[in-house]
Length: 419
Length: 205
Image (tube, rainbow over all chains, first blue to last red; front, side, top):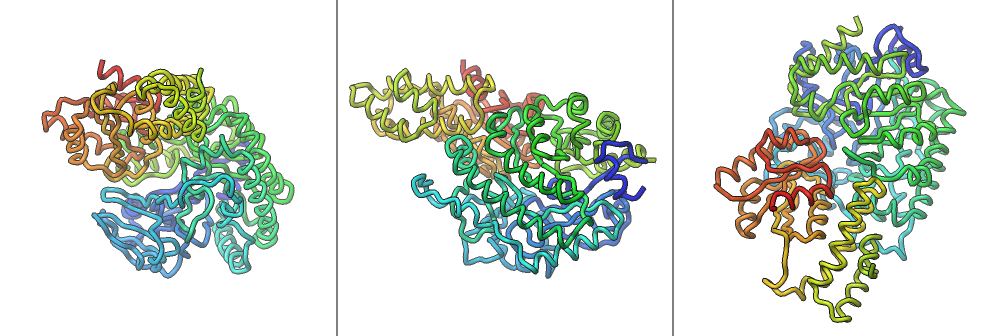
């Protein structure tokens, strides 16, 4: 089977010739650039600086040679602009505070300012604006800086303000998607595309480090509170976003067609480590109708499968997310409350594909031994891998501090399972 | 229950401001208002959270309503004549800028009767110790969201012990658990903001 056939088979809840695997095709199934460099060295690949396509989380691009070494079945298509709104092109070397030289867009590198051992970034790389990202000393990521302008004036809250970053797709971007999906499809791997514009209430978008002058509700805490105290505003916002998304999806589909296998829809997290950010009723009222509008359009007009990222203890919410039309759930945070792998597989395994959940990244992968990693990977693949409906990935991205011997143990165990 | 209790429980900040003024106008002292309305309201919303009937956004709203009322009372409170359960210095550790959970813990502690000094994010071990000494604190609370920063908590605990401070250290944050807390020598751990209050009370009992 090709990677595409393998992914397609497991997404239809059938057994493929071997375990299906993804590394690096979305902003939530990726690998930190520090680990990507270590992997390239381990596999003896060309020694050049890693390209960082997503600077917020400092995710390294998995080039074709590394994808082959890892045996990944997927090829990712990322938005043309990175998380601070700079086009991912005109790459330039930069030495990060931990000593690694990486490639970042020159426009971003040239706008960095250094202070107190840390780095600051600016929307669209424009230093005339206040900074929107900060990597403090001893940190391996750029965290977004909240830029909420004063207190929310409920009497004058205008939904247009929270639609700043949404709009009709332009011809240049359509041409970009055509080029990158053609290229990804030519690899024979399943194509995973993050077209954007479909996120509902993803706080990483709400805080919006790419926007020059953010308006509306732009504080994370304020957004969460708004799900309780401003439900009508949220419904109006989601109605507008989902209608616009469908209009853009029509245009995108007319250009990329069936080159795409999986579309990344939304990364909004509804779970904490031990609870949820809302009740089932709130999810059903505020979110599900608008997810359904987008997912239904995709299912009625394309063969694409829909991917929902949602961290945390979301067991009580899974039925609603499946009813909303999601085919794939990620990252399957097995260490969160009530997220027992066997229970998830037994109760939801025939209705949704688990894309992730392959090893705990809060404890086992960063702090365990290689033997513990191997044991956990074997156990979880045994549970989730039965009768399809599973694409191997870790629980969220592989982070900067993961010992390389643990990542190698993970990759070797996957090879063992797949051989 | 009175209007202030209801306003805090339901997370209505404007109403909380009005209600606290009403209570003052009726001759109640700030300490009475805190003890009779505010702490019970925060305890009640905490219990609803524990029972899974409300969620983090509700706690955030109640905490904001509580703070808006407390802001009116604070200038009226005479030093030495108000009682607290203890003084807590709280912050997110160096290298980590995540603060929603930490701020919620700070608010829940404050709303239940602790004096809280919130140092913000990216806080060094030296700053924690300095603030603890300045404020004669009983507890230092450390928060981290990242697996790459949680190890710094160990450095803070070691620095606190090396300094000879007689103070409890509590830790929390998504990737932590009780086992990790024990392994770095912390005195307490909680998995959520409501539980943090119980742990803090127990540490000082």
